[in-house]
Image 1 (cartoon, rainbow, N blue to C red):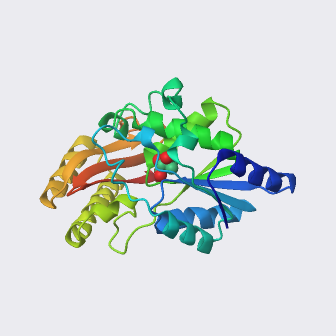
Image 2: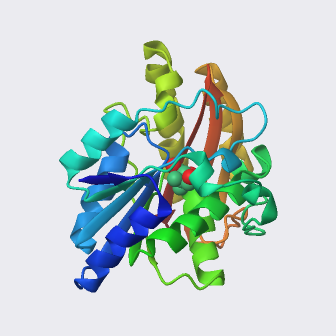
Length: 282
Ligand code: PAF
């Protein structure tokens, strides 16, 4: 695997592969890689000849007081994991390469409506930062296919909308969440949890599964289901942020006639803010 740090080097490498007729796959990351990221590479290799990944802790998607400074930077270990997974090219730019000068203030990509609720409401400006950096990365890499984890369900929905609305010529693939043995969704931020918190953290997925089961059994009182889940989460030591039964396409609150559903949840445990979800069709 080759590692490059500048946009020009990356473009040269990808151009060479494209001229050789290769299909390019792309997995953007912020590093501190876990099995969930590696699954994205493995899935990508089934759909593309050459896999490109980026490791870039993107400052514009962190709000004031969030963990940009303390976010784990583990480039050497990440490169080793990507190489072992069969990734061909790693793009690891410094912030000055992605946002030279005041460039972060000149322009940004804003996806409307679907960003208003859930994580968008809890983290103002977060999705503007995500869609801006992903647009830049799409323009730099020009992938044929890009893969994102379904754990960040709202992020995936935002990226799908951005890709359609801005006519990016890339196929977006969502990949199922990889979980610890107890059900806790893998996340780079799980490193903020103590062992005891990791055990109790599994309650988030248990609540999602229990809510799905109730809905499948015919309970459409979604606010009561959410209230019940929030009580269970609080009892396990979480500070619940949202637990919401939504339409899977728009992420708006679901009604009793909606069939394609996703339950989105976020809750704080110790130093970590955990998100998870479950999607299903009635
Ligand atoms: O999901 C992430 O790790 C980030 O939000 C992404 C998509 C790499 C953009 O910085």
